[in-house]
Length: 112
Image 1 (cartoon, rainbow, N blue to C red):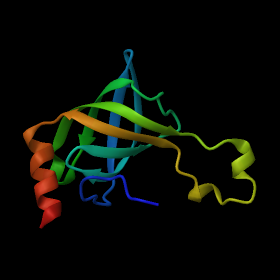
Image 2: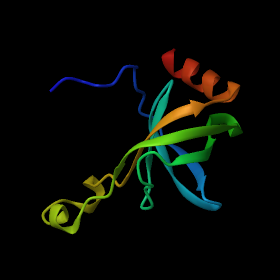
Image 3: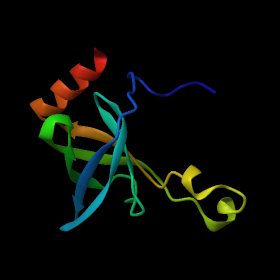
């Protein structure tokens, strides 16, 4: 299977808050790239939802992002049987459509 990812990804976990339709949720942002991030959450939004995100970066910094949900993952009960709960990845893949300088510096730091 071909890898559809166009940019290098970095596994790093940061707390995040995200808002859609005026409701704020929390999750863990991980699997970062310049233009995308995966957010682990039990409240994934449907694809094409536009959302604002606040990512809590290292060293006490925050980043304000706007993104578009590209895919949502919420494993069904049928797929859960026999799978350790920790192995399930509820969440959503986000395309970042607006980023700030803190995010750009964070990605730059991951590049080494």
